[in-house]
Length: 280
Image 1: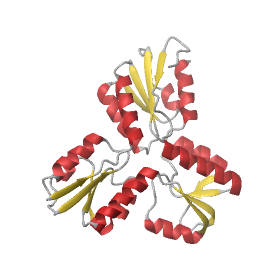
Image 2: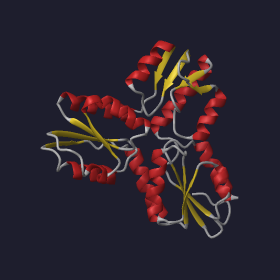
Image 3: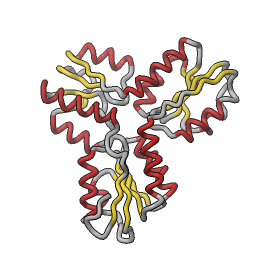
């Protein structure tokens, strides 16, 4: 809790980078210090401000056909074609894929061998979901954003359900409820990140106690957007901010108490900047 002014600021305990993103950023920083300019596939994480900071250190996104010493695979994973292409173009490939994503990929591989069609709960255009679709291959049953998406799905003998690690349990359970009517045998795997679930629950509880809430996250961060949706459903005075500039244009004059939480790709240095602005 912070109280530099009359405004009380409550910061959630589960905040800033999750363990997987922290590991990916640390590996990128260390490799750049040791070997110079380092490349990443896509954005190493979904936070524009942190990506800018890493770029200033020499961490750059790889372009098609580009070659170099080192390339880093992002925390959300990479497809088999990406890995094959990069291994031919770079001397060193560092895989920072989150262990939870790797675990889900292993579950998909096992279920494929046992003849199950793979249902994925998540955002079809998110990198992690794209990677999981790649792992499912011809055994992919479908990608479902929520239970409504699954209602009109065709019947099939065996279905295994997994989820994008930053999805919500409500959506996962809703899809499972719809698909159990479409199959003779359903295997259910709750592959949602426990860190994400704890963060969502803590933010939900704090939002009941404060005048307003601020969720800090990147524009492309799926887990930050879901966190915002969850918190706003409890406290209508919830604001989604990307950087300190966003905070300055919000009217918080009637907010004597402010809760702060963040997505799993939000750096601590950015959160501290925003806390200082709110305190002033």
